[in-house]
Image 1 (cartoon, helix red, strand yellow):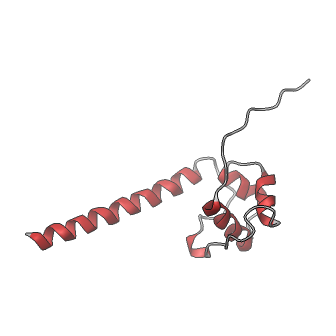
Image 2 (cartoon, one colour):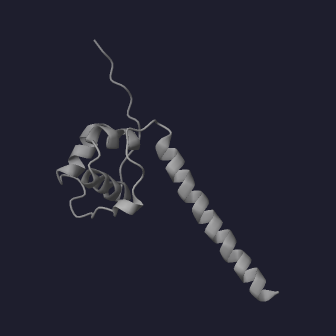
Image 3 (cartoon, rainbow, N blue to C red):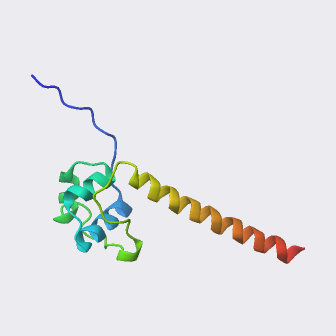
Length: 102
């Protein structure tokens, strides 16, 4: 008797669904999309068919991660890049405020 693997604990939210829809519109394979998010392809199929998040619109192609296939680290790298860009924008904004008060 085989034992089931324990659940990954990864859940998809509205933001993920919007990205998934954009990736599918772009032509990414469901398998690759599932690998990017670290979920079972069935979760991607639920979004593709409208069973999950039917009213969430797709994000524009410019906001999508690069096309797959993916290694497991790609999603983490893309998320880190977004955080770094936000931090850089915050730093630049703070520099601008400091220059105005000097």
